[in-house]
Structures are given as structure tokens and as C-alpha cells.
Length: 171
Ligand SMILES: Cc1cc2nc3c(=O)[nH]c(=O)nc-3n(C[C@H](O)[C@H](O)[C@H](O)COP(=O)(O)O)c2cc1C
Image 1 (tube, rainbow, N blue to C red):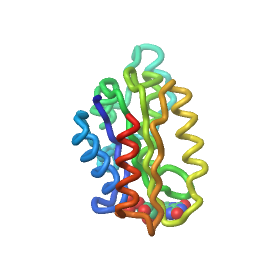
Image 2: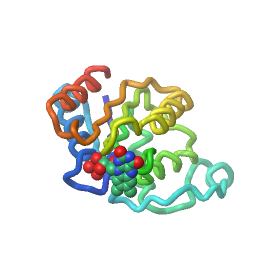
Image 3: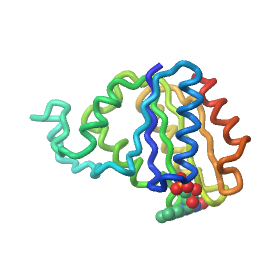
Image 4: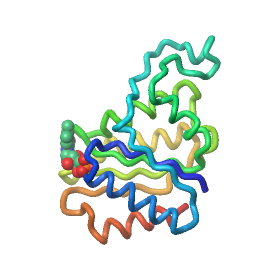
């Protein structure tokens, strides 16, 4: 399957980047085609709510920023994996922007399954992000293939690597 991973941590050697790489390696080993994008390195602004996309734009966003590179990748993906750190009890802004900019097309055309990987320092900080993710899966009509979280003592461990492998096995 064609898998798109959006990795949203600005820390190149951080835990989210590690999780995204582990997912990519496991998915490629299973024969999937994987594209990994670090959205934290992209200039992707928030939605302007100008409604150009739902009028004259006919599905195109008026903002010509790096989201324009992501639209075709989102359109072609069959599996969408979100990998993000928790900032202030929710998914960080770097992952929220590309999700919310999908407003122009409403939903990614071919995505059938999603997965979510989250990093945090503390335990018990995933409630809001998990609810948001499940709502998006429902709204887009896609199957949740699983969630992996890693708080500080679970980061870059064999146990977390095994849970990421299980996510890939769920596809
Ligand atoms: C702005 C900011 C806000 C954060 N807020 C939280 C938080 O609410 N709860 C928590 O457990 N960790 C929080 N953290 C810690 C990160 O979630 C944690 O260090 C995570 O592993 C970072 O992922 P990374 O290694 O991929 O960058 C915060 C970090 C930053 C920079």
C-alpha cells in the first residue's frame, strides 16, 4: 500500500523522528511504498477560512505555501500515519496545520487506514489528542489501524519498536 507518514517534531534526533523511521523501516520491509515528510520543516500556515477553495478555487487552496507539495501526496496515499509530539496536552501545531488545511478537499481521496504515534514526557497526556484522532478517522471514514504512545521511559526502546511493528502488521 502507499503510505504517507507526516512527522511533526522539529527535533531531528528526537523520539517522534525515531518512531517515524521505525514505522517506515517496518512498512518497507513488509513491501509497502512509504513516503516520510517532516512537516515541521515545511512552511504550512493555518487555514484562513476564506472559503476560496469552496468557491472560485474549486478545491484548490489560495495559500501557495508548502502545503501545495503535500496535497498530491495526501491525494495518493492509502494509509496516513501521523507522528507528533504532545505540546500542552494536544498534538503539536506542526501536525495540526496540514490536517486543517485538508479543509479545501474535505478528505484525503484514497486513505483507507490511519495510525497515530505520539511522544510525550509524562504519562496520561494523550486523552485530547486521541479523541481528536478518532473523530478525524470517523469524519474521513477511515479505519484506525492503531495508536502507539511513548512517554519518556518508553522512548527508543525495543518494546516501543515492537508496538510500532504491530501497527504495521495491522495494515
Ligand atoms: C512546547 C512544548 C510543550 C510540551 N508539552 C508537554 C505536555 O503537555 N505533556 C508532556 O508530557 N510533555 C510535553 N512536552 C514534552 C514533549 O512532548 C516530549 O519531550 C516529547 O518526547 C518530544 O518529542 P520529540 O522527542 O519527538 O521532539 C512538551 C514539549 C514542548 C517543547
